[in-house]
Length: 126
Length: 126
Image (cartoon, rainbow over the protein chains, first blue to last red):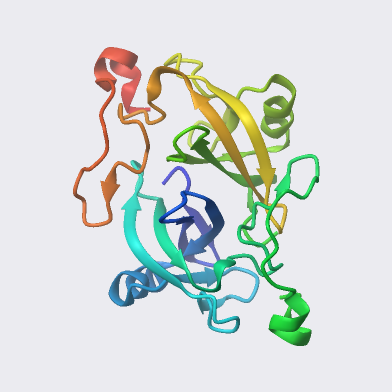
């Protein structure tokens, strides 16, 4: 497990979500065994929230679910790639299509789809 | 640091390499501060090898370097996305274009570019 992460006795794998049509990389999150199982079973992306320490179905608050169109595993079996249909057009809790909306120098280049305050109310900073 | 990883006192960020022309996701690895600095400074992808516990310039053995064409950071600042020109056409040490050459059910769907034994000799299993 080169890229696998162990945290609080829980084994996690990295999960990349990519737009199935445009190829845009939307986000990077982690899955535990349960999140992986539920993602495969339901066809909707589930992750392990490391900050909230709980299973998290993407879109459970925002409505911005990810429908899994294709599902890959890497050579070391410690990272997965999900090609998804991003409901609502934005993966990022900051309101952008992709969490990678900034260049490394800080310049914002991504497209903002919604205002986080309107979507999440006071919860948005989570 | 939702997706950041701490290991042996070292802070790591996840790094996704994506082909800058086709959008294919090539691999997932990690960077420490030095790997991030060198990647930005040289324009060639450097990672932290968690299995070998050392800095690793992608392609230093195989010749399959990654020339960074664009460089993004995510909302939480604990993951980066590199759009790269993959020298040699293959990112995976198993000889495939992408490390994500298998579907989650194990079916191989990726394109094999080289035979690892020929490229690395006995070193290939690293």
